Amino acid sequence: MRLTPRGLLFEGHLFPAVIGRGGVTASKREGDGATPVGRHRILACYYRADRVPAPAPWAIAIGPRDLWSDAPEGAAYNTLVQAPYPASHEKMRRADRLYDIVLTTDWNTPATPGRGSAIFLHRWRKRCHPTEGCIAFRPDHLAWIAARAAPGTELLVRP
Image: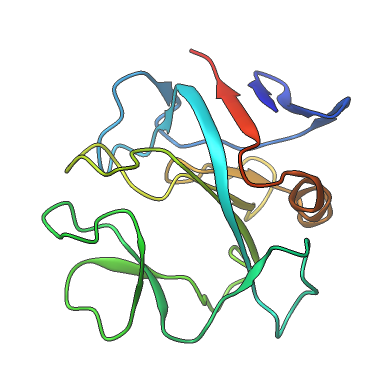
């Protein structure tokens, strides 16, 4: 899959996509709101089993204690952790529908403090609303992508 100025090109389809409010960058850092340039790989797929069916046989249901660490000083930075977790994090089981399906990438894995965390493919808020650095899609497009993007699928983001 390849991110282009017109959207995400994957398996012959072009999907409209929203990127980070900071644009695309080759020098990603925590909190800059940018989508990092590079060759990334899909690592995992998480989903809200109480809201959507599993998008792929290998998808993992998001539990009520699942969090993502975005604390650069923590040993678990840029990984899935469980509540209670005292360091900075975001909930994977959100009240809104942004993380009903989430594809995680290998951005900053293994983690280097401050290089940024949680570059996900997830649902968009609305068509032109930027993300915090992730790549976001219409819900039906995300489900289609998640059904076909197995672990190891390459995501190319160019400057």
